[in-house]
Amino acid sequence: MADQQDVKITVHWLNNSRGQRIIWLLEELKLNYEIKTYKRDQNFRAPPELKKVHPLGKSPVVSIEAPGLGQPLVLAESGAIVEYLYEHFGREHIPQRYPESKEGNVGAETEAWIQYRYFMHYAESSLMPNLLVSLITGSIRTAPVPFFIKPIAKRIADTVDEKYTNPEIEMQLKYLEETLGKPPAGEFLCGATVTGADVMMIFVLEGAIQGKRLTEKTHPRLYKYVRHIQGLESYKKAGARVAEASGDEFVPFSESGR
Image (cartoon, rainbow, N blue to C red; front, side, top):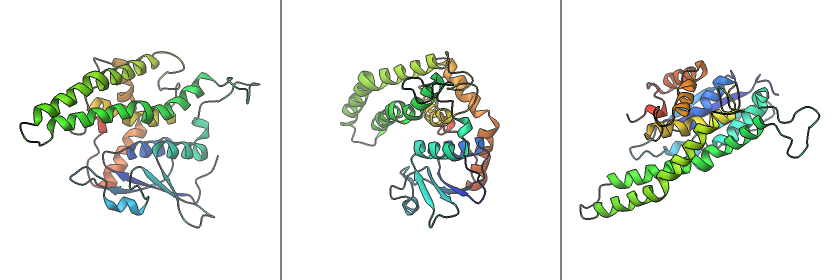
């Protein structure tokens, strides 16, 4: 595991984005870092300045300066960033992969490691797309269209939600509610400590709360898990750092727009 000595980490943070999960991770790992903030425009799009950092102009993006590098290493995509930072600065927080004497054996991986690896990818590939579809159908219902088109647009959005989005999201949240109630899950998804799985999941679950898909009444275990993370000192410090850097009060994504 690398020492951070002489390594400079800069997070390119966009409001109401996945960038906040990276700030939380850095606080969990107790790393030094700088924040460069960006604000969405009136159409909720990222500003063009972000494309100077990465061609796609998305957040999160992390740039790393280290001895021997001719130019900063630029990392994009939450999963890639989380894995890279854990591999170099927090390997002890990754669940043990193999039991003793089982190293390298196919299928011998621990349940905690399998769960960790699964949720590292699940967050953005299984749950988030459905929440985005729900966001789109909601936008269709409120879109400024001629009055005679509005009932048609609403009917289309209602049909998509009824036939696909609603049952899919409910199935996903029910699965997560059950997962948190059995080993290897504990205080967190993979046991007693925060892992990359929790870092990846928090933004998506906050989005589910923000969209009123996840409530204390409908999914009490899952709701408690999110609020527990938001109460962690590392999470609060991450919010304070962003507030200081942006000049705006930090509001968790779960409460944005309320």
